View: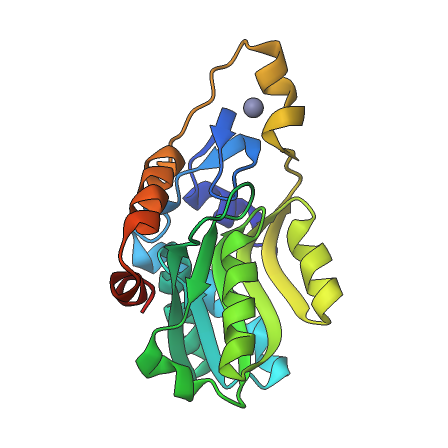
Length: 223
Ligand SMILES: [Zn+2]
């Protein structure tokens, strides 16, 4: 089975000049909100991803919120294993790339300790969700054995997986150019205005708000 056409069909891809969650600029935007709008179309792909992950004796699937967790939940159900998720938060006083961190909620942290965990995401691009989730699972004492995704863009995910000695399984792969703002050729040509489709600029506002919070409120925000 080559599921790549089905995966790409589910994601309404757009070409342009986009601000990504990681802070990079990119030329491809996928409307991930649409991915799980028809669960019966995603289900067979999650079953295929689960089949590919089944040989790694995974005990828990962890999916980053939002859409990654929906895919992770379906994969966990197919594998008949436990499920948990990680939530995004903005790092205080963090400038530059990867301003977002990911954290497993307190009540779920004991369920991954000492367990073989697969991080499952919908699409991995610069990898901020997977990297943040991996770091927090390490803090939880989990043994991350695999990363799974419906679609992997570019080489960041495979480089990360290789560096951590973790298996990467994906149903589809596409090349994708990412640039830091200073070296972005699309900015340099100034023909295409930068689009903040995902609201990254809005979240920078959230970051400032976080910085002004009193410490006890920050803890509540971080959970
Ligand atoms: Zn740019």
